[in-house]
Image (cartoon, rainbow, N blue to C red):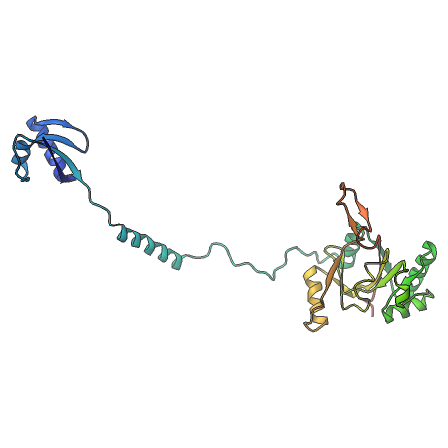
Amino acid sequence: MINRVHLRRRKNNQLENRLIKNGSLLKGCHFCFIAKLSIVNSIFSLPSVNSNHYLYIQPKFRRMNLAKSREKILKKVRKALLTRKPTVPEPDFNSEIFTKDPEKDLSVIFAENFVKAKGEFIYCEDLTDFENSISSLVKIRGLEKIFLLEPVLEEMLLKARIPVSNTEENFLGSNIGITSCESLVARTGSLIVSSKNPGGRRIGIYPPVHIVIAYTSQIVEDIKDGLSAIKKKYNGAMPSMISLVTGPSRTSDIEKTLVMGAHGPKELILFLIDDTSN
């Protein structure tokens, strides 16, 4: 018969050593062994059983107090969270994303990007140069049925002796729509237009040719600068529609074939009037 007894690891090692010396160890391994009870009783005071019985002696390990250990770990985590320093600085959302080249003129940057987007760029030194340029364009290309709704632009075209229409019944038959814009974005070569433009939303979308008349003072570095200008212009009352126009309308959804004028004008022409001297 074998009685099972658990001992502390320290006492277990002492018993094992003495049993080995006395030659009484019957079977053993690193953690447990079997010994005759009479030999064990002579070394340690154990429960009284038949001295001819054998004992299965196994070390008794202390159970870890999980609650205390868990609390110690959580305490270290809390302390680390309170004392740690942020390794990554907080992002500055107002900082510039792109580097600026102060030596390069914004009008040059805009013109280059505008032409890359397949827009037609015409530079005018002043209003007189504009009148001559747009008059030549209309005559050479045979442009007719011009529609606009902005009184200032209408006056400019009448000075250039170009007939225009501003009546609703002539809108559907128009081939050219002329509008102004909010800003010119040099970074992307884009025009920013809004629903608060006197021309509204439709003139820059429906006619197959869209002509925009703008000034060099409207050129901004990036899109956020253009949006800030709109916010300032309308005293915080942002338009219900703000659109970024980059070149003529195009799509390549069908078989990856580029088609111009799919959702808007096939041509985008910009007359940029230099007003820096004024």
